[in-house]
Length: 320
Image 1 (cartoon, rainbow, N blue to C red):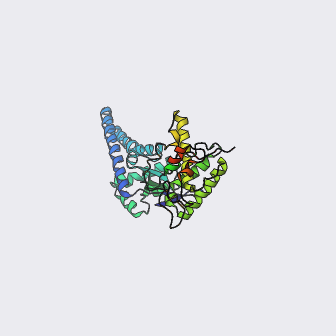
Image 2: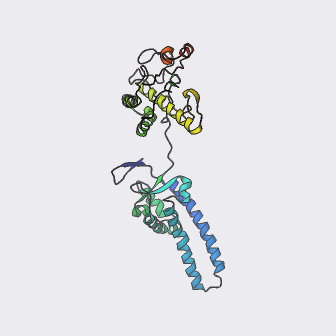
Image 3: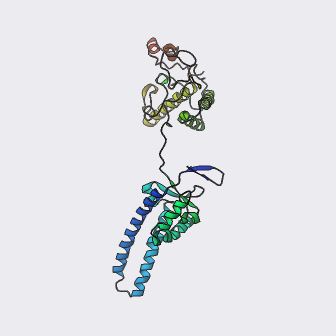
């Protein structure tokens, strides 16, 4: 992974394209350009048969410059660094600071590409890419550009993990209107990176965000519920409400929203940090960081006897 530093001193993690992928993209571009050049040359040869030899030579030179040189320059300028071959291979040409290229960048790359690629059959470009630490050819060096990969494999285990089943529907009466979008984004980022963070750091971040969320909603975190589990349950309840507003009717009883319940990956570390932290949420009746969780405590005082026995009560009373 290579770091590019922008003018604002922001480090960008962009993965430079290596020689195999760049060579394949270059080959695809050359095939397309040569096919267009042959078709245009044949058409012009038939249409200029009545002209003298000097005129036909001038037309041939103009066709070469316009198709083989001007064509790639125009395509990279209009597509912001994505030719047909680069789109097929998931590559893009960007500036050294990570921004999109302009006409002058494409012009320098195209002009030097005539020598690097066309006249030397790509030998100079391959040698320069092998010598460069970022795999850049001479056109990239003089233009101040870099070919990067757009499609990078995503590491597994970083997805959002849904809350435990015994918390589903518990926060249906929670008022979420005062929670800003910035806090929702911070909560989702924290939950998505929980498996990648240190146990102490993840627990502290979840506790701080849970405190901010409880302050804005006016309802404290229920006793015995870890901060990360509380955040996940509230996020799921928000998704249920958004689904109801969007489609008119959503999952009943605060059930799991499509796209959250079936997320693959290991369970989130909802337990407290330390050696005794469980790898998943305990089920009803099992030991918990703050003591055993009984079905009656999950159901709450406002639930019926049947709901208490099954552990499906909301257990939440809206603030006055």
